[in-house]
Length: 173
Ligand SMILES: Cc1cc2nc3c(=O)[nH]c(=O)nc-3n(C[C@H](O)[C@H](O)[C@H](O)COP(=O)(O)O)c2cc1C
Image 1 (cartoon, protein in one colour):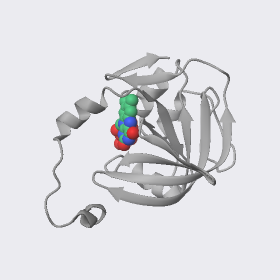
Image 2: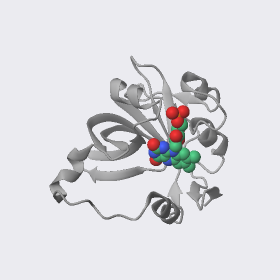
Image 3: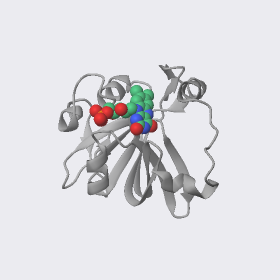
Image 4: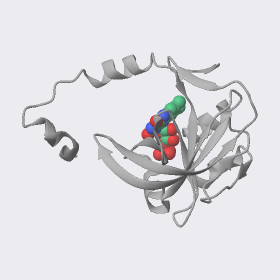
């Protein structure tokens, strides 16, 4: 884990504490995504706000997933995933894939209508947009793995209000 921070020298890094950082991050409104994967390691997924565009040439994005998440081994082994950006009516799907209903792995797909595009990762038909991705690199930073991936296909959903997570609540934008 030290690897990513060694470049900054031997002295301890000064940071705000975790609680302050979490409180600060709660002020940021963020789109809610369900990141899904399928392949040899099975089908699973998780809810994420830590998704970011990296480059449009080649089309590349990143997703940050806690190393303790049960989805981590499957995401690594399958090498493909789909970022499904939820529409405003996707709150039940968000809670299911955040583990809030108790459903795990394959069970989480009982909610939603799923299809596949290029990589075989599950694509949510009702998503505002879905990015079908192939992993090209994984970096471990602190508590998380950062998955970099190229976008092989997109599913543009119908124009609709978005689901945003802000101050620890879902909001419709
Ligand atoms: C709105 C929301 C956003 C989340 N964003 C992330 C995220 O970006 N990265 C992450 O690792 N976990 C995130 N989580 C937590 C995971 O969804 C949750 O820990 C995971 O699905 C449940 O863990 P399990 O898959 O191990 O059961 C988020 C949860 C919620 C409700």
